Length: 577
Image (cartoon, rainbow, N blue to C red; front, side, top):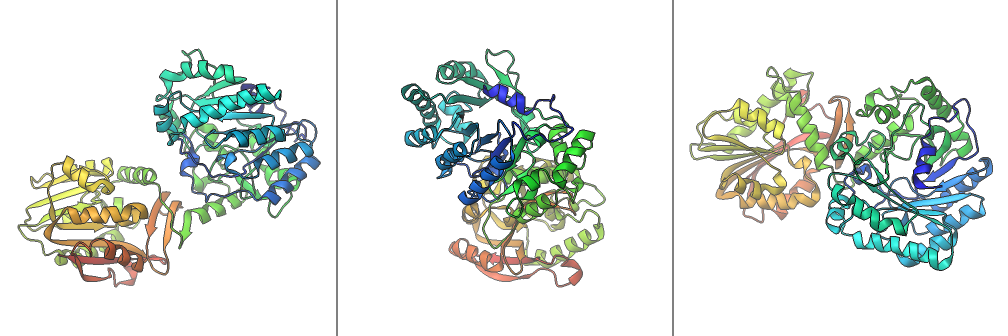
């Protein structure tokens, strides 16, 4: 069976949906979700899940259970998300699959860690087919798409697999897949001509939405491949989705998932660490979900975003059927104590969406939130500016740099005559609103990331400043970038400068929200709430070393009604040199 035939069979609309058959079922095991590449079309690159290797004993148990109850034609795949060749005992699992009677075993790899010896072990263990995911035809575009300069390693692995098949006389299949995008379009035919003699089939996929995770990105990357002399395949899921009947999908954590295409566990329904595979796959939840698909009533399932190619709406999800998924997502998106990076692109998209919510009657809620409580927004803004503004000691010679300025909330607050105000924000949409609100000659706004502070200011022909505001911005900067930002801050400061930092703290411990769905905001949110001690250490290592000293610090709000968060509180530092 060729690669395109395998996909066609898996997604075939002709499948009977009256009952669940046990013949020709695929067991798809995610031996790991870790990956050494960051392909720009793949949602696994930005997954909120911790990386994990499936326990070997657990994998063995799952394989044995499925072998016992599945019928003829059972197949096994050792890949869902991640790079399976990172799994140390993969060849042992392949060998076990043959001992247990699985008729066909296969794996997908990017090929970059497929050393000759490892490939030989896999083929000698009985692997029936391997697919190399090589998404470019040149080193340059490969680096751009995969995020790693491993093109030569990948093509070497393909060449070795082909040569070893001829040398050994084994009859395993070799496939190559490539996602066709605007960035590799011009090289696809040449790459096909190179790869075809080395494999049984090369298929060029159109970018897909990955179960609703990458719908917009897929549209952005997509280009018409029909004019090329290549074999293409467009992955489209339908309702009812045949995968619910023909595939058993097990994540590296040990969860039963509806589908192999989703990287953030939105589609998990049962915990196989606590329940047998047969009981789970043929159980009430799976049967209920199959019934919803058969009736075409999937609006309250994550499947809807995949099939309709719309944004996944967590608040619409059936809380009973997907209780496990919602609980795991909550755990993975609320990370306590441990350091975790947030996604800058997701954060930027969030603030661009916030700009769309701008209302003149409640303008500050765009960045202060509390959309349904304009009085609280007004009171917080008043209390903050009344407390912090005098500490800046503004005068006619003040040159103010407002980082993460949003729509210019602090520009509103500065009513005394100053020499210059420059507001900077990485959201073009927020800056566009700010420019509409202010027209004074000495007030300007620019778009840019604080991670590249010096470069952005130089590009906009700005000099140094003597009053700098960092109001609620450090929470959106990862630890790996924070020291650089603070050191750049010292470089753009004049010899005599006042810096005001206002930041929400984690009261008892560090808290990271990573793609966390906020019922209040009706959106996914990313932020890092560091402890006071963490911020003090950061200041000691940067601004204090650059000659600044802390002249004032403390909690911002004394009124209980302004402190309506249980785990975080607003804190401020005034630094001078």
